[in-house]
Length: 123
Image (cartoon, rainbow, N blue to C red; front, side):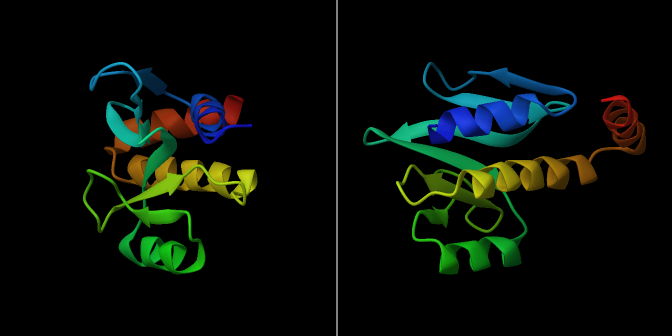
């Protein structure tokens, strides 16, 4: 399964997620409550996914995985880019999508967080 398909499937299974292409065709932006947590794009024909991370987590991931780099066209401290790679573990990609989502949700207002918690409870 491709990196973009893994990310899209993981993201769209989460509550209150929308997908749009505000930067044009071929660049899918996934948001929770209008806040971006995943961007699927391509660079030189290779698929990449940008995900939000805490600075320490991002540094650790970049040190461990050769296909994870500082976020392309994003804040290098708070975003990582995962590049399509034959060694990419799909479970890691899914976990990183979920972590990015949860990081963004944690910054939402109380009412939005409560709505998401309620939606999670019924699914």
